[in-house]
Length: 628
Image (tube, rainbow, N blue to C red; front, side, top):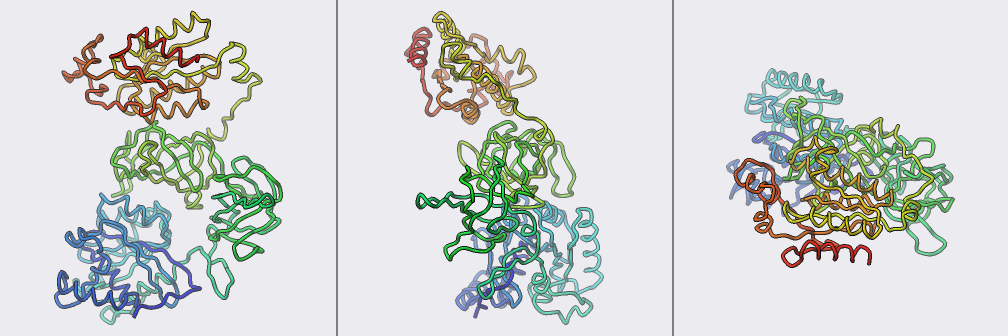
């Protein structure tokens, strides 16, 4: 029979990581078995599977309890993260079985991101390996403060104390270089159960705790529920100032406005002075509301609804904090990134950054360095590939509320999302705000963009012409500007080739340089728009993400995307500058349409079919749409 989970005990989140054939799955299976966390029907299935596909002869193959994917069983490796729940008399556990292969680094990061402790497994015959160091570095990077080295398969080295002592010393020396304080080493045999839940008679020379005893002693921050009361276990996030990201504004009627969310740090009581960030408005907490009635106080880990004494603006994405101990607010910071997408990081490209309930557009600079997770060294890098880890500056479109990840995981951990596919491409951990983000402030102007537009007597706009090289963008843009000028409109034309002779002369034609080219042009167009001008641009701008980035820079309704739709064959036939011929010959790399992609607009405001319209007719159509 499986042991019944015991309420009122601390919940410890644990990851296990090890190299291939270290016996990780066997250890976890044995741990579950000894903790009586395996049900009767699971035991029957395990016995049957052990006879059919097991590797231990007539004995139970405990690895089959956790190797759930058929590919894992076939290859004898862990691929995905598997979670198991079990309990002892002193604690409850959620155990994440993480993959050891480097190609599954992102899976390990997923499992480690919420863990309190890590079991790093090594084979007694091989000792500390490169993968051992990599797993330890990742665990430390993700804020895991409690690490135990489980030296497995001691039965295969004759339970030799000297072998264990050497491995423990090697690992201890390496852990010290990382600054890991709470590190233990335990000699075990997952197959035979030595020092798993009971001390081993075969290793009487070891006087330390069993693996289960060590896990039970891990200090965690959380809530204990006993006899209907909540109390805080440990300090950590619960010991600082209030951190309450607002998930939802609850307004069931005209007389109630509540702010629902999860407390991720500190504590709160009615009457406490609080501040709403990023606005900085200050008020007091009026009530702490739950489905079971009002509370006299609430602490980290509880989901509650807070009502405020004053009717101030506070919406989803805002963070309610202790007035005397506020969180940080900035729009530029340094962070560690773990890249999780098949497509590499493109510095300068706009991604969605999601931190708690906050979602904002963000860009990543060229990495300061890439981390060699095998030895902890720093390597130069221009980008990050799948499973790559590096440190880079991140800039957000507006200030966000955060804490360093080392102080509060919930307030310092974020993900990056591709704006087109909506896939998660990276996980990030904030280090600190960049000093320039604190020292640079927007200067208010007495003359507003609306006043400038009124003085010019026109509605400013950005006409963004996009299409293949040779599509006719520059020709049509020139005609549009000339005719608008004749009508008395105030305009400026930004042309791709012209800009690359000055502002962007330092940029090439790689994907990263193309992205930066469009970002700079977008900023210039936005400034000209604020001046009241009609800005006409003629750029290939091949990527949807960058065109969307520029659209987001300007007020809604002021960005007019004009797709100059010309088939590649027609554009190549024109080839006035001879660029297609050079690209076909291999003399011109990263040329759009040949060896670099063009992503046509999906819903442009204006589409110009150059096979059906002359340049003059196209210009007339654009002006009619603009002024109509």
